[in-house]
Image (cartoon, rainbow, N blue to C red; front, side, top):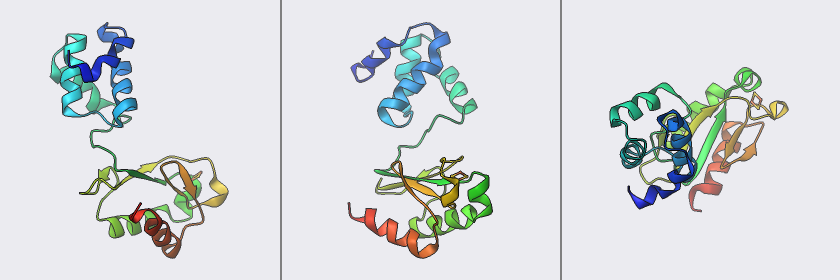
Length: 150
Ligand code: FES
């Protein structure tokens, strides 16, 4: 087994633990890479295609390596009403990536998420878990500049 994935040993080797194994990989690497899929298939003794089938079924698993700064745009009800679609469009225009993508230099990634739990600040986004609320185009650009050269 690829020693890089030795942490899988903490997950029981029964194929019924496949989702736990995928979650473990994503917890360590931030996504599920092609390399890890092969390691997982090897560990559980199942075909790669079976691992890929499970991956494609569950939206919780990311197949793209996240950027250094993970931007999450809330599209919960309150944020949607207050313009989350517009916020996402601004971000897409500024960063050149859509939700679910990472920019070419691996600096920013963008995703759309459900309620971040601070609806009174809608519309809201977070960068690596730090929440920014009452967004408009000007404040969003200011936030991006903060992270641009970090
Ligand atoms: S709906 Fe966006 S924080 Fe609750």
